[in-house]
Structures are given as C-alpha cells and as structure tokens.
View (cartoon, rainbow, N blue to C red):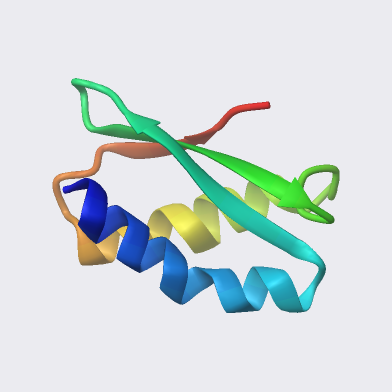
Length: 74
C-alpha cells in the first residue's frame, strides 16, 4: 500500500510545489492513518489544515478507500 500512497502523493506534489511547498510521507499505522509532513511554504501556511483535509486527505481516500485519515506531523 505504501507504493500506492507514494504514487498518489506524487500526483498531488506539483500543485504544492507550485506554491513553494511539498509533502513527505512519514508512515501509516495499524489503523490505516497516514502521517505526512508538509514542508516548505506549506509547513507554516495558515491554510495548511485545509490543504491537508480537503485536498490531500480527500484525494488519498478517493484513490485508496482503506485509508481512514491523513494527519500532519511536525
């Protein structure tokens, strides 16, 4: 499943990079929660919660329905 997550993040990455940010996969736990790190401009952006939940989480769950949630780590 990790490879599928990485491919999905690669599809999201150009949009984040266009705004000076990026996303890094950290891990997935036993409850199918995916942990990511928003980097660059996305790391400190006040809109990062919206990007995470309405962007990244929504797209990952559409492509990989087994994922229960996506959470950001520092």
